[in-house]
Length: 114
Length: 116
Image 1 (cartoon, one colour):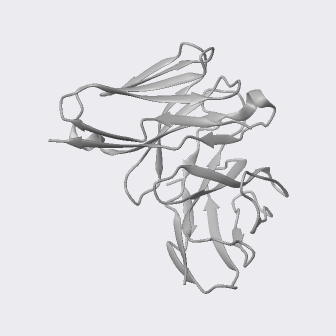
Image 2 (spheres, rainbow over the protein chains, first blue to last red):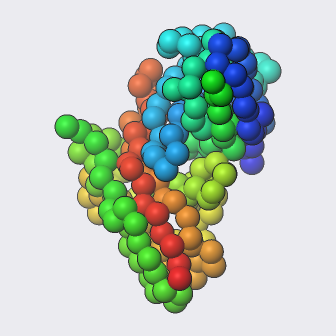
């Protein structure tokens, strides 16, 4: 059974600081997604990482994927209040034989303080 | 505009009643999904469907049922057999395959079900 774990589960950080959210998964996969969810809202796609070593950047967020370590990171640079949200990683189970089935991590609640 | 429409947004149910949550998409996506989200937790997969008239159980299918009679529609029924149905339910759709856009899920706004 595929397990997807994120840490930390909760992150309180000051504006202007840098931090990294980690996403570990337990079985082979070469496709990983990052989503953002604002309180009470739906999920919005942020990044799709398709291969080992993939790196994507958008604004103050940068995501990377290491399929050998089964690890993805979401790095936040010089945080601003608008980044406060819950961030989820999701892993495609294609590598485990179940096609097109996404398993989500537990989520990281990010609170950026002024 | 293309997107996913879920209804109702809020729903109250008495114990012992079945309720059906609607999900409609006009994105021409083949795959559709239902997830459940509990407060402070991640998303858990209930059911998913990759083509019309076919669907598979996810990790927490007990007490739920679905149908996929049309490509655009994937309704979820929460039956009285579901012991703890109060949750936020999210429907999503995506395009299966191996291309760069494959499986980037588009989510609906969600339906919040409360059992009284």
